[in-house]
Image (cartoon, rainbow, N blue to C red):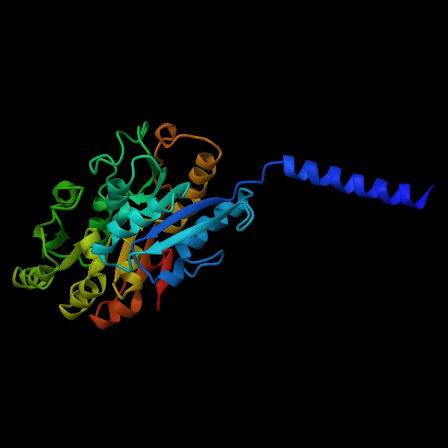
Length: 334
């Protein structure tokens, strides 16, 4: 074959290949927004974040075939436990025009204010219907879907556990916030369980200001409360370290609705497995990025629940955890 003809043929073949490559559209790399309520900004960055919850979400996506950097990247922000930051960070994610946003319960009202169009996957919404985030669990009806936390529904179980740990006639103080989205539901749920168990209750309704938390603990002591049940809200999450320290200082056996309080030094928690919720949230993200509408994806309820006990905190208040209770714990902090 003539050498010049051979070289010319190669050049034409290369040009044809280039034309085909140009004709094929580049694969879209989706941008997934994430707004954490607490933790440092660095804990939610990149393909291998420090945040255990966010890692669970990325593991779920990976198992569904999504490759970080090839199919998607993340735009993650953290409110660092400061309520006043949630609104600005939510607006920032909206301005970035991400394809979907994932967020835990405390940041959801800010995301609701920020967008009515970008799909939002809830990870552990405490009361999504009464908050106005969705129309119903079966038919969300807007741009929100995901997983509920069932905080109110498990109030009775927490009350049973704390009475098992601190039996006797002394009443249980319920620390709650009527101004939170679930309204009076936590107190009503506690009352219902207390009637069945024959237990006395003390209402510690914070209502507005974190500065009243110390007053609430003083009131519990004055009323000779034998134990404490804390119903988590964004306000309490922001002050969880103060709350757990006050419980130890007042020598009050306390149970919380989120494991983060035990990780911060609290005694005991019973809640939905938050890491499992993040893992399952990946299914919602997968469906939405493939074209499903959030309005048509029913909100799921948790299927796994965790009992977490802090033996060190028990020793600090002179309390011995019954072996029967320890044996049922999913996680024991020594």
